[in-house]
Image (cartoon, rainbow, N blue to C red):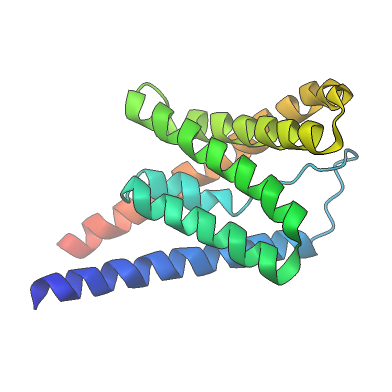
Length: 173
């Protein structure tokens, strides 16, 4: 009985986090933020992935990330948007997971690396799709954007993670 309760709570938590990531993606798409450079987004949904890597098993975080990408792509995008998002999301996830396991990186450092990896993967896919390596000239701009957005998401993730831990400790007593 206890195992089924734990499994149910885990499924509910993953579903809630996936729904939250989808809401973040949708809200970000609605907000007309123009950084002056095409293709740059804040990546608010990555809050869930970054925080999740620090308190959930990696397989569950990966499942949440892939499910969000596929569902958002099917609901609001197209095949190409899914391709770009999957490439970015998968490389980002595995880079962040590796750096988190190394233990020398803060949550912000992990987030920055994930944002940069996401941009690198997307520019690689774009160059392959259009068969034009000149797209890599755009990479320095995307790397700078990745560092900036990764820093913002990392700082916010750290604050949310700390708040979650403080709340857990408060509820323990």
